[in-house]
Length: 115
Image 1 (cartoon, rainbow, N blue to C red):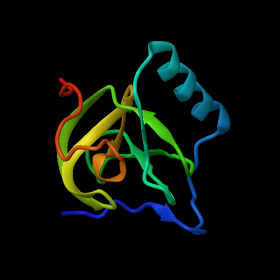
Image 2 (cartoon, rainbow, N blue to C red):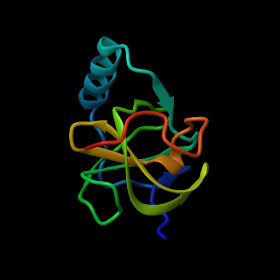
Image 3 (cartoon, rainbow, N blue to C red):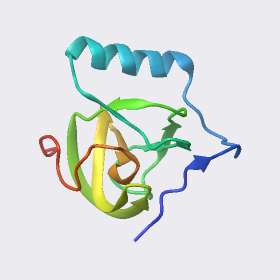
């Protein structure tokens, strides 16, 4: 089991999402009417290219992010503020975050499984 390394508090981060990327993600989700889920308060969550910590780090979500969940996929077990889970949430094409850092209100699937 892994603990996904995310930045909490005032820690430095070497990779971060640009404002335009965050705005594009928000605009895309809003235009589709997708439900958005809050990321755990006080955390900057890593976005990876697949469902595990061994996948490439794409960017880091800013504090207070809300994300759409397009589909969910089992992967590496991760511990976070919302428990321990092997679910990973697809938030955009080729972008996954550990479900243990997203407040979905459920310990299981909240949408379809990724194919």
